[in-house]
Image (cartoon, rainbow, N blue to C red):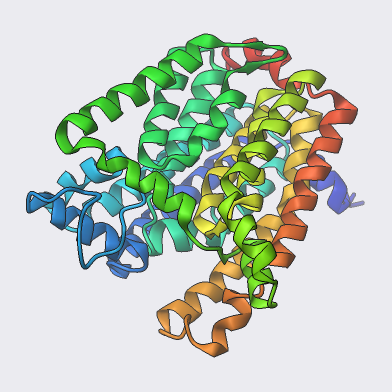
Length: 404
């Protein structure tokens, strides 16, 4: 008599990943990574990367990175400009560094997750977040956005913080800030320790930024500040709810103040979330993840690439995955799938050269409100989960994680 064991879908998801499955998955991920590197080179210079190269060529010609005529305004930090030296080995070398950085942090967390004997559902969530996520594929490997490397620095900073290497954590986040300034909003969360602040993280990050700014000032004066002024003065774009409201004809009496004071609104929202995390003793990693999403939700420059660091932070939650962290990941999956699908459509219009035509208005001007609703709901539901669970899991398990 043959006995047949029938597993329900729930039982399969709750089952532990076998050693054989871990090995096979690792091999598949390695093959995927090779494919992504091939895609990186075969796609060449696209989207923002064209402007990156123009800026780097301007610098190599002796020009000031933030003072150039005839090319797009340099909205990035000193490290982005310095990285241009890699173009001496080929125009795509910085793009390769962006891709390798993202692959490195993704592979590192994957190895750590597999070593922790995860359940099948955890590996499935990782698959949705990274290999099957076209936001990652399109923006990091096709378009070559520098946010891939920013996300890598943030991810390794998180890992260093989990392992108790506070100076390293602060240094890495400081480097991310020197690439693009928005990671500065994550520093309070990275330093949070229940109702205390780990000042080593703050000092290490601040010293790193200070040294980077000092060297930049010596080389090019205070022109780097124009990137901050440019960011503050930009109009609303794509995923921003303000861009959608402008398309719907919102009056200038609302739009002008909303755009002018948007930076203050973003800082207030993130600051409020930090104070709530401190008061309610939320875990730093959960709060940091929701803080990053809150930045993208409220910032007037609604570019999808700003979500790449958020994806890496979700992967970090998968590694920790106490009950609260896992629930935040599952709450985020619908938004991940939505934005991944959006990136497929975005790229199709962009590569066809019709993104700025009227036919593309629905994906260029009319996605801000739906994105705001879904991303805002994700943040609020995540806060609710932490409020109910008080989210002390990350703090409690840091010593255990450091021994994995």
